[in-house]
Amino acid sequence: MTTDKDLSMDGQSAMAMFAAKGIDVTPNKDQGVVKVVKRQGVDGERPMMGDRVTVHYTGKLLNGKKFDSSLDRKEPFSFNLGKGQVIKAWDISVLSMQKGEVCTLLCKPEYAYGSAGNPGKIPPNSSLLFEMELLSFEGEVLTDDGGIIRRIKVKGDGYTNPNDGATVDVHLEGSCGGRLFDSRDVRFTVGEAEDKGVPLGVDRAMEKMQKGECCILHLKPKYGFGREGKPEYKVGPNKDLVYEVTLKDFQRAKESWEMDLNEKLELASGVKHKGNQYFKAGRFHQAIIQYQRIVSWLEMECGVGMEQQKRIQDFLLISQLNLALCFLRLKEFSHVVENCNKVIELDGKNEKALYRRGEARLLRNEFSLAMADFQQVLQVNSSNRAARAQISICQRKIREHHEQDKKIYANMFQKFAEYDAKVGKMKRRRDESVKSDENSGVGIKRRRRSQDCAS
Image 1 (cartoon, rainbow, N blue to C red):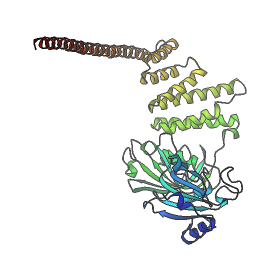
Image 2: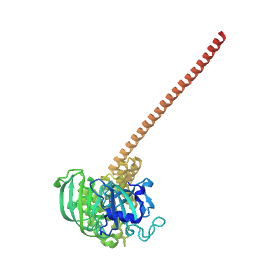
Image 3: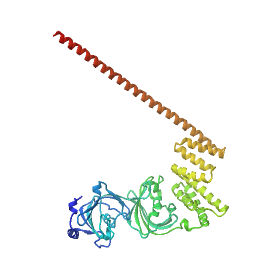
Image 4: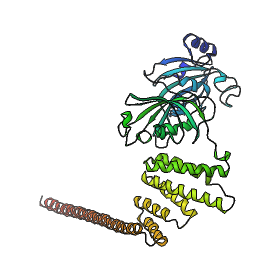
């Protein structure tokens, strides 16, 4: 990057330089942000709206006074582009940069800190100079496991997004390894995209999109076509996918607070059926979406009368038991335990919940806790052979674990004993060597005295 001296110029000199060399990067070309490229970046993609970008920068007033610098802190700065996390000038200018590019920006007050300024650092209505280097950028991560990454080509309008159950009209272009395999307009219900051959990752991204948005989604296999692939599209198993998605229009579903209890109970029956269909087809992620909708609708509801209260509890018990079973199939054992605990809070003697929690704990190597769960199952139903068999497995695992611990500790103590013996032997040798040296020294002294006397 350039030096502080390069940014030290009076207002007139700055204006003259930018007028001669600068490029207006504002959308409406009002000279609000003018850029001069100091070093060209690497040819290739530029950042997109929503990307996580990392930059180095130095900011100065037009009189040359520095007010901030990531270089002085020796720490680059990262932010999500176009999310209002930084001043408007940065959101605009970084979109025009390439990786490795270094540029100087002249920013008018309305694109910087405006009439308020930044007390103690930037006076009101100040134009600012920034030197900026774009170090890196990457797409917006939409899931905790990094399985869906979004890059926004065209920003959407408004502030609302499709919700679970919304009806969406989209244009899709799906590719795998650079080969286009799907290009179509399609309408589907959010949470049920699988019915139209649309992968889970596209479905889950809908809740982040706005009308008119066009984005590129990078999907890991879990959010694409998984281990099965999609033979009709000639997509093999465990393939990463790229989808370009344009949200043309959508109709939001009613939110929980917009529905009365009878409406929720009516819808819950159909949603449970849809979840069961997905479960039977091995579409566990899609089934989870359906069961979670029921829980979100009903977990805070109190029925009027015994009949309504029983229907609420029945739906919650079934949904949470089914969620536990889905998570068990997906080997997400902490979620299994969590959902089983919710069932047991409602029904402390629920045989299925106790058994499934025991299965999850056994698979997490929590043998004593698992055995306690299976023993509770037998208290509820003494003829449950599966629980009795699982107790035997837990007992065997506990014995094996204890035997393994004995071996580990035995080996450990043996090594300690061997080490102590080795250290003791070395110490004895050292002591003997010192003693020998002392005796040798005494002998030499005696010989020397004898020689002295002889001479």
